Length: 598
Image (cartoon, helix red, strand yellow):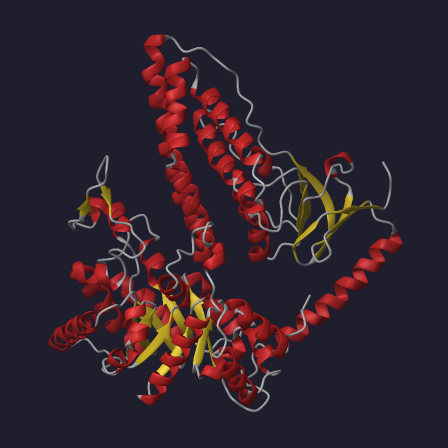
């Protein structure tokens, strides 16, 4: 085979890795067609549905792994797989094929997936075309159970540490487990920048190249490989000169990374001396170590729902265990503050708890069958907590009990009416009286704040500011509610505009009202981590932002290039514009962007 071969692909995840190739042969979904005796068809359907049920349990376990390794954002991938598992393609089409054709479940499943794949291949939209891999990932899981799980991850077990995986394709769950094998990098023939594999590789910090045509024809296990995830190249059996070139490049990139890390523990200050409080968004206790590592000032948003529900038996009503969770978080960041957001779940999660919760769950009627209320603007957040005060009281009591460990703040999600805030305050005072009678110490001065994510709050924020100690703007929901555009809708993705003039006007009004009443105002949505948005947030007067911990050093670096006076001027000009495109053009034209670190 030829030496020093350079293959061109798509840069999926930055970094350069050097190592020996391991050619990963993914599990093929090749099955044998068998006829099922008429009297055994019902049993075959039952066997298939049992495999689907077991797959659902697998996904629960996978979700726990993803949460531990990557956090909530990527756990949504597993949620997407769960929805696929509930899709009529798998729950109805496959059983119907078994019944009408009298064939075995394995073949009915593969036949159905093949038909769907043909439909996906015909799509011109890259994003949707890539989603077929998720469907096949779920289908492969079901197939494993139909096979009695005998073939589970056989090839993965053979992957040695410190290797570079070469594959035709990697499914998202493959990628997650590759991290456990301590691989140095990977390259695939299929995939795009928008594939889940690429996104996961970035989060796992694994150098990766995808979309390398015919790569498997040129690579064998054991070959020396260099993967450059910055430029999207794979170098097979590299020469001494090629290896030297990429070693030098690796050293250069490492120096740039060290320069970035050097600002991690420094202050978050603009060029003209304004200090911005940058704190961290957290989903799991495992992420606590990242707060100080990346130089964040405390926790700006601790999403408690995942922590409280990750155990086999959720601890919603276990005050003692909840107290330990909050105590760990509060102690870890003291003397900085830890903003603890109360449970933000929907009624669908309560249904999952079933009899364990011991709670009545409201069911609304559907057209054909009953279903839980899982509407995005339905029974969730503080609405659900007040509907089931047993949950709310347990959480508030646990936070109060843990409060002497540091400086917690309590944040209410999905508030839309002032009465909701007052009800929580009454309950808080009731719990304080109980603790006093029981001789349990707690902090009396825990600030109570609300998320500003519903238009009714943003428009009349002055009324809410009179009832709370601080506010934090959740732009993810605020944008979709104001623009009447579900952010999960691919059809309306073009309308989900964080820089829409109406959004900017609301944000500006909110910060002015907060400062007029001497209340602290922060922002914790995805907008806070957008480099293009930082000058706007500074100019509007936000006191702090809360972001993914990994973003903190980059934001600190960008702050050094900005002056508060310039940012205020940019805000003045942006508020005069009438379209999203005009705002973005203004920002790109007037804002100095940080140099890339890699």
